Length: 119
Image (cartoon, rainbow, N blue to C red; front, side, top):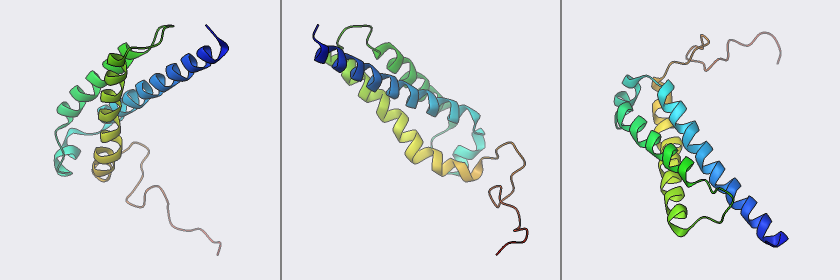
């Protein structure tokens, strides 16, 4: 294998690893949101998104190349998984966020209390 081929293989592996990380991030975020937030936001239910994102994370993990250049089928699987994760992170997560209470005692001001002195 040439040096260029090795670099390409590393870049492809990084690409697939990023897709897996995005799917895993979306899955963890979905699991930490309350189920009622999804219906309040007018989105599909949390169990639906958990199933979709769990499947996407599994497929993205299985698509990771193991020292060889991945076939076109694995590229398709990776893109399919990326779409699921990105749709959740770009569309569902922002819609659900206002209805989700996060730990830490943040109030409606988003964690910013009243100004103390200053300008």
